[in-house]
Image (cartoon, rainbow, N blue to C red; front, side):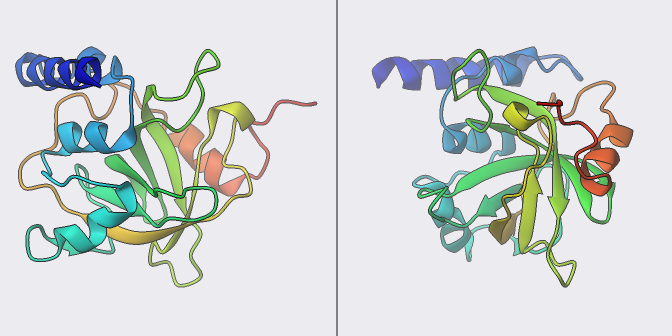
Length: 187
């Protein structure tokens, strides 16, 4: 545990001194989604991811529309018993955004790694971001799982450097969202 906190401290320190557009320190993170979202957004909330929505009330602005730098709060479900938090890195269009987060897809067989500019698609019937699909590396696409969302907690300052890449693939994000199975490998 002590090593994990030390790594988080180093991550925060390296993010503070990184040059604009340099994502390496942010993307070198390995760990849980909550410390990553806290460091990447500047939102000082602790505890399980699902609890961020209620904890933010009266402390941070909250809403139901994505903004770059905001933290999206996933509700807890059977698949996400602790919920999940991620930081919006790019707005592509009204129902498609990109997020940067940690501990979602497996990389080299392990969870915990940070991922940048991952497709997030609003599939809610009222276009209100209450239900989303998230790109998942193992399936090379959005998959079929719909995740319920509490909303967005808005960061108190400007977006952290390195949230989005230099050349994010907006077209691929749109294809992920609107062309089912387009990116999936043939099995």
